[in-house]
Image (tube, rainbow, N blue to C red; front, side, top):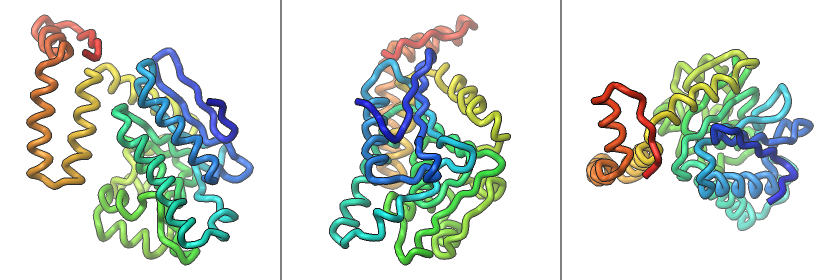
Length: 261
């Protein structure tokens, strides 16, 4: 499909760069943007030539500075619930696509912007980034997963501190509490993201997908169910050509060549 509000580029390494492209609105998430993002995430999931994704925002100020307040202000309760469910489904499509993703947080990541970043596998932030869930200042709560993903990343107490105050944290503080994985100079943010993915994508692609799914299952279902899934997924991975190639390459002291089979 064609996109009006995002940019989609895939490089020779199979990494898709998805850019929210509304810099005049600080890349705010309108309903139309969310629909385009979902289509992009589904494209990442189904295209075998795409192995990973990087998300970022256009311009120099914002990753995504939040939702489109003009849209939020006129929603009825029924419309608001549907609005939230559409965003949740879009972000979940990224989270469960089976391929690693990086949020390259190049500025403000507020409200829906932080919720989008938290749906990625990892988050790298530029030094000028600020991250927060300010919804309570508008008399609402996060609707795209913020109340669920934030405590999973930083713990209940720290998450509630951010959710109830509505105040953002700096990139350095976000790194200290585990909300972002690294803080890097803004000019090198995309290079850092691509370098990290290059290391990840050198590993077995089926193993990557199974590892991400195992973490997801365990967080959703608890330790016992997670351990059962892990054992089953370990069995599946042991039956793959990638396992045979990986172990053989280790014993032969060479770099493995994985085929994703």
